[in-house]
Image (cartoon, rainbow, N blue to C red; front, side, top):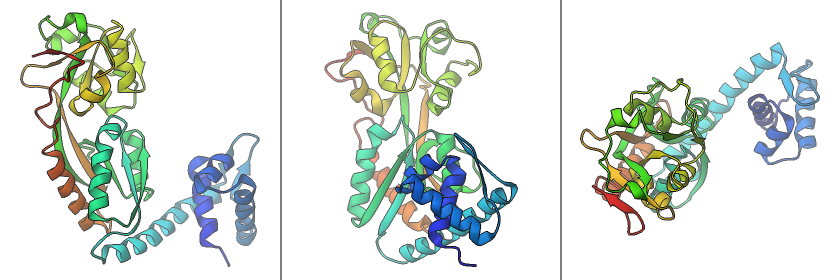
Length: 312
């Protein structure tokens, strides 16, 4: 039997995406080329792997079993490469990092700068998406590490806290002199949140003692920027993580205030597979990022900038 590594990679992508076009895009090849490789793989195995439909594909029973084994084979091959990289003083080659959207725009410059200084020969691949997707891709070996809000409570992963950041209240500028509401008062206000799937949404709801499944006649946005702009238009109030405050509020007529103690907060951290050969290097990266973010302006001492009305 003469299966190729390329065929295994292509079939793994097809099994994950469930679509020839998306799999081809993920593999950076044309759809006909990927389809041809899958067909050759089927001919080599002497059986069908994929049921081909007009708009989507479905794995056959044999295809499903093959996909599980192929994932394990590819992960083992990747770990061999990671072991070789881990044996060197500096990491080289590709490092695949996942990061959630409520952290990515504000922390990525620090992450990239830190990695460039520690490991100048790295080829960084950044993946920005929601926590459940990152954790799944991390478990499956599609990512080397991820930056998320902790805890993720996944027994196969190591968690390394980086820093804690507070949540700030953003409300219309005209409300700057009003008392800062507590969590009970917030429940009676029009609280604007990110759409379902964002862990920051769940954290905000938890602070207000609101159920995530409760019906809400308001705006659920896909970004913090949209939330802040809607607050500036007088549509309601929202919460933002401290590191996002300066970036997201500089172009909106809003007021920013801290909550009274105990302030709502989250722990930002980095996670990786416990079995990863790169664990030592990733711990070193975590330590370096922790040291750098410990002196960041938004780390415990953030103040609104000149374009924002402050409410202390």
